[in-house]
Image (cartoon, rainbow over all chains, first blue to last red):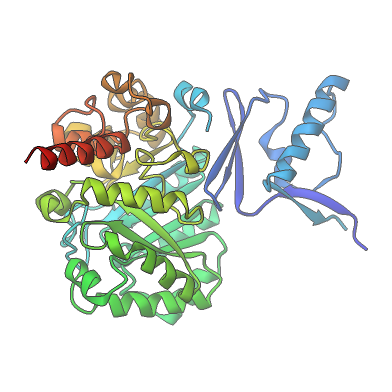
Length: 85
Length: 347
């Protein structure tokens, strides 16, 4: 069975704003404003990522905060599971 | 909705309305842009495709196409394809009369398009009285074609005095057809201004609609009713006008406006023939004035946090004052009905 990764839902988009990331879900439509600053590049979500994968070079605290945030995005349907192999 | 982030200003709109042409094969009595003949000097194909590139650069998420009837533009599918090629999501507002199975099949090939078919009554006679003879049947035929495709489809209805009682039946019709229902607010712009008195819903109709909407969470409103939104729908959408903050409008000749209902010279933010999209979004004084707009006259209202003064376009068209507060907000509907009750008792 293919391992599960995560990817931005096809109905969703993300871009960088001054405060952080702005997510858009065309199914609502609805918006999610994430005060992530420059911690996470929007391109991070444009390819399939392994569960728990985060950009390199983050502190432990940043990893913990972003890990929770990515979980929230999954819970709210902005990200969805995707086979990675 | 986080108003703080919105009021700080976004790098570009989240979505925008692009009225690609004023050409229309119908003459609906509530048309916001008095469509019929194409505007003089509408954007060329090259200009339209260049705008798509600018929207991509600006990271605009979605373009909502309207008009006029967008399919009256011979190059409309080319413009759509350019948007989809850049990953921009699109929504087309159409009267449905120019949709056939071949066109629906072509549109369905992308997963980036949604379609709204305009229909202004659950009964043929109600709809055709507003949109023209035979239009109801053509819209139903288009909806049936679309329902068979994978294109997310909705009936789009403008709430008027004539169809207000038919909204629940329209909802049932939408469910029967396998599509969703979206209800838009009637605003006194274009031919809608000429026919405002005869078509505008009464305060009691607006109140009744607001109560029905509260129980119908799956019905979309494009947030055009945020000034009427009851507590039950709070959290589903906006609590303030998004013009020049979250959205804007591009007219058929490349002029930009805060929203589709304010396409007048007074509110022209700039021309894409003179400036770039990003320059207009960033630097327009008109947009700056909308971003800093505060409806002080409404601040004491108990519903202020729910609508922040409502729709400036309605305030402008009815009172010639964008600072005046929405004359058709929920609070004013309730007050108006109460006043009428007092007058009747006194009589």
